[in-house]
Image (cartoon, rainbow, N blue to C red; front, top):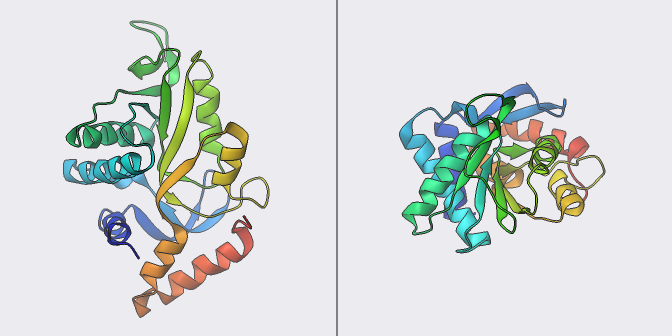
Length: 218
């Protein structure tokens, strides 16, 4: 396993972002592990997360200046942290996010931060994709912006689960909207990491059993 993947999984565990147990995903599925960006609560933690996302951005997108979009609520801090991480690498990119409810006073509207203009490309920053529900919601919100294009989405973990078909949710998003979805690590990286310690046997078996039913075929 690449060292940065190991570092990232260790970071997720130390920040209590990666948890094991019985959870319900936004898709309604009962899942044996959970990725919760809401557990990131300190400046050091959010700074480190931004560094990982910035590295992924530079690896996949390069030095192209895209606009970062953080869906409310968890995606907001990720977008901000990623923009700071990119700034430290010499790439100054704008960011914006949405309100859950449109504001009818002051500056008004549903968006806060930078206002994308026609011709610009957007990169969505999310925590995780299970069935693709959150990304589809984001695309509906972003459809209010004329002339902009989503270039990619970045998430912490690719869960490798099927979406609405036998394909992975990430592959379905690419097929539907035409942009790639990148992750820092995937669930099989997590399994490989956990298998190094016999104490993790039960969690490994539960995740494997879950994937046997819900894992993507392509």
